[in-house]
Structure formats: structure tokens, C-alpha cells
Length: 490
Image 1 (cartoon, rainbow, N blue to C red):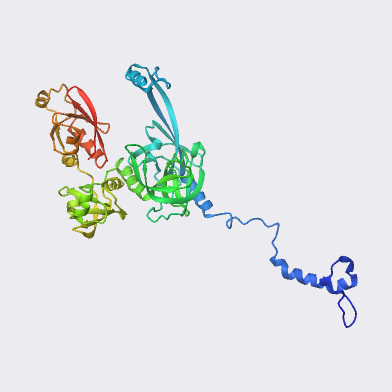
Image 2: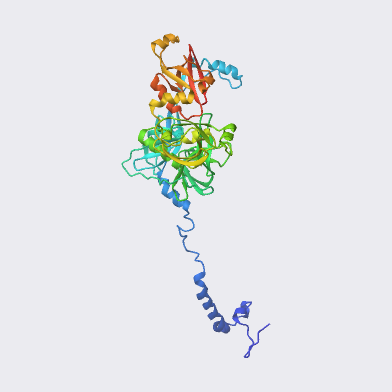
């Protein structure tokens, strides 16, 4: 229907429904000026199809920036080690295990086979001097270590020190050119759910990047019967074989952990050592080549239901101080037997085992804070840990395991009918001690502690210090002409 005008009927140009309705004269007078005005107004708002994407806005995410900054400091570590083994030609997988064990008794008569084995891992350069942080298991028993940088440069890696308790090792490379280094972060303020980035060399594939979140904090992982690692960061960022030793980063590209393990029974669960814990170990390894364990001079025991009732506690959480070594850091700080440790470095202590496990994460000269109950009153104590003196090893062994030893003199060798004088001889076993309960007695000779040979008193003292704070200690004890392995659980 046409719209009537006071002059004449016409259809306005913006209501034209078909091009056939357009009168050329009318289009020139009405339609064209309106279209031009519309284009001038709207054109600036229209997208430009031919414009190039702006790098640094949407696509250059924080993850991209972090990887670009940190990538050059991440290295590939390949190791070579010599493996020697004796092959049992009688071994049969279908045979009863009893017979395989029987033939295994004669294994030493079989020829030895030797071959080279190689493994891959990752690491990260932490300073301009060329120190590289990685896992102890990456370089374990390596006879040769090769370090390959992201730019293709290759170096021979020198082992500065390693610590199996924390699974941390430090390597060093020598370079005339400046080396890229990583920015150290902090693991004290990590948040569950925050984004993390893992970089490594899984399966020999160089510089693979995966992302995820922090799934949990302060996890304890049991690797085998002898090793339990504590305070791990749990993440769902993919960590595969070869990622070990590589960095775990926060979204800013700061180093917050060292990728260490994957949980074999589940997918998407990986673990990393918190960087604050690693820093303490690294400083010791660079300075001394080994870890000087923290010593406070205190012995703890588990709280029993009876002790909980005696002290009027709500539950069994905590570790009860049972003994204090005179002039030790604990003694100087005023700690007393009967005090109950509730927190160590701000983290709850659930048991005596928990305390012993957590204290191994500290080194000599570290400042350690304890939150304790003293006469049912809460108290905060700060101690400076020291290195356990060698001279206290025997006193420690007596208080801890209930044994006293001495060198094997000619007189003692004759008295106990010993044919050799290697080892140390038990002279006293405290009743109801861990040694007494396992059946050790005066006259027994200690030949080995936790696979560490004991030929004399100094060996014994060093082995005791190395074994201190462990949940159990393995002894090789000689009685007469026979040797026995016994495990003491203090």
C-alpha cells in the first residue's frame, strides 16, 4: 500500500522492497544521499577483514610468556652407567620359585655380564655459575652425564652433590658464554587450583610443555619400603618419564617446584618437590657436597591414649619430647621432656613419625620454629639447627637404640672367640631398648649399618649419624661365624 503525500504518491527509498520499485530520478534525489550518510556513520565500527592478528593480545597468554622466558634455562640430561650382573642360566619363569631360589644360591659361580645403560631426565640452570638442579634418581650411579641446552649446546655435567633422602642433586657445567637462568619463586604461598606449567623432556622429546593446576599440597609419597617423601606438590599437569628434574612454574614463570614422580596407578597425578625445601638442600650440596642434616638434640615418642589422658589432650596429634641432649639447640631453647610438639615450621605434626619425617627436610643452620605445649600452655620456640657432632654419635646410639660399642681389641677378640677384628663389638645393651627387643647382646659384632660398611669405630659413628631419624635401621650383625641382618625400629 502506497503512502500518500500532500504533493503526490511515492514510496520512500528506505521502504523499497524490490529494485523494480526504484525510480532512477527518485534514487538520485533521496536514496543515494541516505546511503552515503549511513556508510560514513557506520564504517568506523565495521571489522577490517584484511587486518593482521595482533600478537601480544589474545594469543600471547601468560603461559606463552612464561615458557618463552624460562625455556632456555631448561636442560636435557642424559646419563650413561655401567651395569654388571650375573645371569642365572637355570632361571625359568614357569618353574616353582623355590627351585629358582635354590639355583640362585650358586649365582656367584656364573660369568658376569657388563653393559651400558642410559637414561634421560631434565634439569634447570639456577645460577650464572652453571649449577643445575635436578633429581637424584636422574643421575643415580651415572658414569657419564651429558647436558644439552635448548639452543643445542652440549656440556659434560659434573656432579656436585646429591641427596637420596630428598631426591635432589646438583650438577655443574662450565661455559665461557653467559648461561640462561631461571627465576626462583616461593612455595610457601601456593594455592590449590592455581595454574602451573611443567617443562621437561619426556621420552627424549625436547622441551615439552604441559599445563594444569595445583591439585593438593603437602602430600606424602611412599616410594618403597625404606623411602617416604613428604611435602610434595600434587598437580594434574602431565609429568612423564623424562620430565623428572624439570621445573614446575607458576603463571608468572617463577620456579615453584621440581617435577619428580608420577603415580603409576592413576592418570593425571604428578608430584613435585617444593622449591623452598629444595633451596635448603641445594645450598648444602653446593657448599659441602652433601647434606648436613638438621639436629635439635631432642628425641620424641608417640602419644598413646594413656598419655593423651595424662596430659589432658583432645586427641593424639603431636609428638612427645622424651629426651633432650645437654647443650643441644633444644636444650638451649628451654625445651623439656614432656613438652608436646604440635607444629613444625607452621605445619601440624600428627605423630612422632611425622615429626621425624619432616625434620629431615631441614639442614644445619636453618631456623626452625616449633609450636609446643609446655605444662598445658601453648608456646612458640625458634631454634637454630646445628650439625650433629661426631663425638655425640655413641651417646646418640645409646639413647636412640640402646647400644654401647667399642673397638675390637685383641683381648675382646680372644674373649669372644673372634677370628677377625673388623667391625665394632657390642659391650652393653640397654634392657627394653630396640636392640634388646630384637635379640642383640654383648659380644655381637656390628659389620654394617644400612648398607654402610663398619670396619672401625669411626665408621660406626658416621653410619649412626647417617641413619639418625630414620624409621628403621638395618644392621648386619656377626655372632660367632654367622652373620644376621636385623632391623631395629626405635
